[in-house]
Image 1 (cartoon, one colour):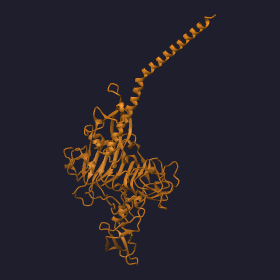
Image 2 (cartoon, rainbow, N blue to C red):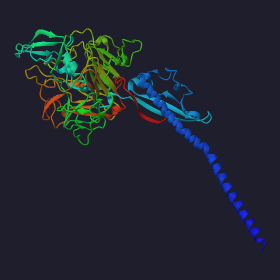
Image 3 (spheres, one colour):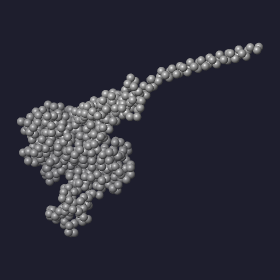
Length: 592
C-alpha cells in the first residue's frame, strides 16, 4: 500500500512530460509555419510598396508637366537629370530598407501628343531590401490637360461681345449728362472705353462699369439735334452711366452637358443645368456656396434650382489663348521652319473649304505658295479637289488680293446686305468658309474668322472616330445673309445651316449668327430640326447671340439645341488648342 503514491506521481510526471512534448511540437510547427510564411508576407508588403511607388511616379511626372507645360516635348532623353528616366530609377526618400523607387517611360511620341493632346506614360515601381528580392509593379497612365473640350459651353466673360453693340453709347462724363444743359448735346463713347469696361469679369467691376477717358478711350460731345459729333473730345475725366449687356440664364434654359465660365453667372428664375460639372470661377463671392448673381438684386441669391439640376460650383479659370498661331507649326509651308513642314495645309486670304467624305474641295485664289497635295498654285483661280483631308487647315491673312471688299470666293452673295452685324468679307483677311461632311479628323483654323456656310457634319455622327474642330482667332459665324431691302429679309438665294457637329472655339470674340436680329425666324418652337443644333462643344471669349424671341416664340434667327459630344473627353480634333497653363490630369490608369 505504501508504493501507490509513488506510482501515481510517476504517472503524473509522464503526463506532464507528454503534454509538454505535444506543446513543444505545436509551438515548433507554428514557428515553422510562421517562418515559412515570412517571405510571402514580405513580398506582399513589397508588392504594395512597389504599386505605391509606381503611383508616385505618375504624380511626379504630372508635377513636372504642371511646372512646365511643354515638358512632354522632351521625350525620354531630353532631361538626363531626371533619374526616373534611368534604368536604376529614382529612389523614394523615407522608405529606408524598403529600397522603393520608380522609373518611367513615355509610350507616346511628341508628334502623337501634339496631335491628340494625350501623354501615355508607363511607370514601374520597385521595392525590396536587396536586388535579388525586389518586387516590381508596372502601370500605364494616360494624361491630358484640363481643356475646352470637356464642356458643351465655355465662356470667359458673360456679356454680349462689346464690339457688336457699343459703337455708339451715351454716357455720363464727370457726373454730367448734357454739355449745355438743354439736352441738345450728349456725351458719347464711340466704342473703346465702353468695350474695355464691359469686357471685365462681373466680379472685377463690371457690375458698376466706368472708365477713365484717355487718348485711346476719348469721350466725344455729340450734337443730338443734327446727329453729328461736335469735334469736341475729352481725354481725361471719368465716364459712367452706361450698362453692359449681361447674359442671363432664364427659366426654360436647359444645358445638356458640362458648363464652365470664368465669369459669374447671372441667373434669373430656374434654368436647368443638367450636369454636376457646372462651374464658375467667381473666386470670392459673399457666400461660399453661391457662384451666381441675380439681375434684380445685383448680388448672389440662393433661389431654388430646377430639379434634377445643379447650381454652379467653383472651378479654377481656363484661360483662352490670345490667338491660334501655334497651329501654323503643323502645316506646310512653314514660314518659321521651312525644312520641317507639318502634315497640314496652309492657305492665305479668304478660302472656301467644302468637305465631301474623305476628300475636300478647296478654293483659295489668293494662296501663292503651297505643296501640290494642298493646292496646285498654277490653277488657284478654280476650285480644286484634294484626295485626302489634311489633319489641320490654317487660313492666314494676305497682304495682296484684287477683289476689293469682297472675299473673291463667293461671299457676300448677290444681293446680300453687308451693313449689319456680319462677317468682314475683305479678301485680305484670314477667313475660312466651311461646309460639308467629314469622314476623318480635321481642325480648321482662321487667323481671323471661320464662317459656317452650310451644315458641318461628321460621317458617322457621334458613333465613330470622325471629329471636326473649328478655331477662329476672332469670330465663328453661322452664315445668315439678309437682303438689302428696308426690312432686311432673309436672303432667298441662301440656305441657312442647322446642323453643326464640331468643337467650336472663338478666342477673342464669339460664336454667333450673322444678322441675328433681322429676317424671319429660322426655327419653330416644336421642330428640333429647325433649331441651331450643335453637337460637340462651344468655347468663346464672349457669349454670342443666335436669335431673338418673344415669350419663347422665335422672332428672328434660331432657337438653340446644344448637346455635348462626350467623345471629346478622350477624342480631340487634331492639334486642338488647350487653355494657357492648364493643369494636367490622369484620365485613365491600368496595370501595364
